[in-house]
Image (cartoon, rainbow, N blue to C red; front, top):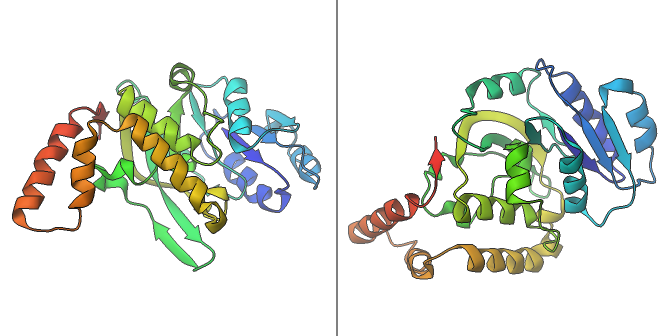
Length: 259
């Protein structure tokens, strides 16, 4: 379990306690802090040996910190729970882990509750629609609800820090689409997070779009299939629906997945 943070002591307490209160006991908890100027260090110190590793040093951003967490982790699975995120119950990890097909998949995606402060919207994710035609190209599995095999993170590679905001999306697309890493979607609500970070800021919209376009251009082939679907995505005639279904089945065969 890895939590990355920077000047987020006001958010961190709830995150830490949602981890240490889990009924699943075999958790290695690592906190990677970017040399915060607030009382993060003092707060972490109050939890004693319940925090197995605390790293506090300058970093170059979110993905640098996450990569440090990967390099320090020793468990079979790596989960990222950022400051402010928290698990929806004290037994959710134990329950989710009992449902994964560990021997058959390498990445596991759960569901999440997503809160967007500017509009006060609260949304429950449903990625079951990604069975699994086009939607990975237009959405992402946020890492708080994702379980990665550590050996798979090492094999695919760390998060690419040349992407300022979309490196986790780039990792998912590279792993699932290019390298055919097997994955499992778990229909379990695991975590609640607040969409107030860099990936949801209106000020970063152009960067997000630019990075997303670069990722999609690199990994989604043949391009004509996706151009076709996007051009006619809103058409609901029977012929267009049939065409999209047939093309979807063709593309799905390229994804090594289980449900």
